[in-house]
Image 1 (cartoon, rainbow over the protein chains, first blue to last red):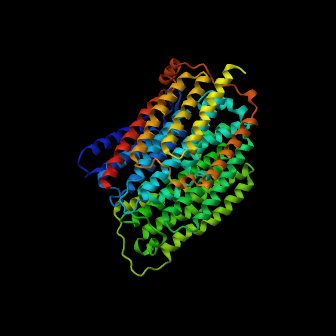
Image 2: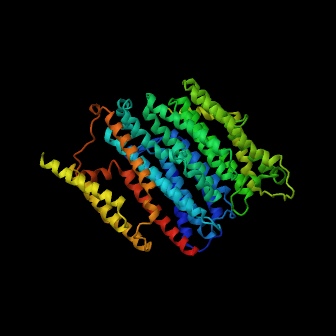
Image 3: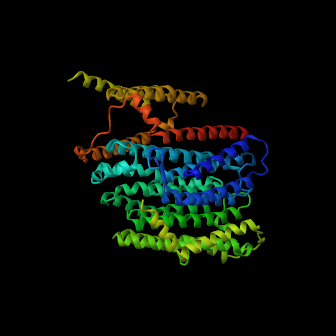
Length: 465
Length: 168
């Protein structure tokens, strides 16, 4: 019962393994939708589970269960966004869903593991599954192969650096269990070596988050992978990476300035770089990749406070980030009917062609830019106030300036879809299924903007582990 | 000088010479041979540090498996045994040297600026039996997860192999 969501995802992938062995490809998408919804349901059921497994290498508490629910909900939404026009060969659909679920399984294990070797291996399970599904795309050029190779190499290098750091952590503390590292690390934090080891260990997570020095892969992979694959890569790994980042960064309490300063620099560079390069992008997926780099910077602002309020606001921010990114990608998936990449010009006259999609995009863009009453505003508000309370004024100022810069290109999306006239437009008919996803995403984004305190209290409560 | 120091220096020389051959030689086959020498050197270092199990693993995995894999890759990739000219441009050497020196200096400063007295070394007397024990009790979760990881990579590799065959 404790690890029911994980066991269920294994079952999920085994079912698709068997479907892939057969010839029939008729009900694959429906099956995936039903099974992923059950995954979400099961992970909600397991919310209150508590316990430790495998010689306390695997901890199930409210904190990990919240992240598991987020991952399951993300998987569910991604699968529901899938349409058969997305450019994945029908023949490979069962394997595709199998790897999606295996990747989510790795991410779920990541949020529960409290032992460094398990963490590395869960990280690899989720990454390997993604390396495999990136090249699965029906298209004329070989962009997707290049993207897959880049993803593989960057992933391998970042894992290598992370293992190097873990080797150091083990060599100076003599343990790979976070609970045992924690008391010994307190003495080491003042040492250059301790900070060095911890930062190297965090590198693998920075890669998943696409934070500044490890961000190179993001734009190319977003561009090369198919739309749904990109949606998955842009959202779910970041949830688990945040969970892990919080677990590892809190080793560094009490606060040591070398470590916090390093995080502040990474955060500032990441948001500045992401926003400035984002300004000139035409391809929507590249634009969202740079926006993701910038948002990783904002997220770090919550984590570098290293206190419960700041970290709870980081969890809040990653939650809202997932939903607003999903909303943006859903618009991209829906307007590119052949599964091709959408550019800014494809958005022209969207409000006439499909008012609901334009509305979804507008809400998501407002939220990404941080304009009330959307969740993005509330999340940024929490992050900025908590960083300010801890006395990190420079990063708050940099963050605020960046939020203003980013408004330009996010609102450009809205401007393109609302004010530009198009000469010839055909009305896009949305099915009931597509409408429901739009409404759900709009509802969540607005809800998290208007009524944040219930969720915020749950997140704060979960941090008392 | 003790005999141990002589052994250490010999091992070090083998490792360094292998690494230099790997980087500088004009033919990929020689580079592979250099790599194998380096791997043997590192295995020797493990023996020197009283870690025979890791030394055996190093020889089995790196010398035995990975080198063979690289040899197969060279064999299957066609007449690429001569290193292409653009790989050995001076610019590449200089940038490689700069990267190596920067990382060396970084590592060196970090090690030198640390006070090692307060840090206790990790348990060193691990025998093969202890490692086997640890794999089946404390480290059971990673041990089991590795099997899942292998399943993922095998299925993925087979799928991609079939996928690329169909495209041709």
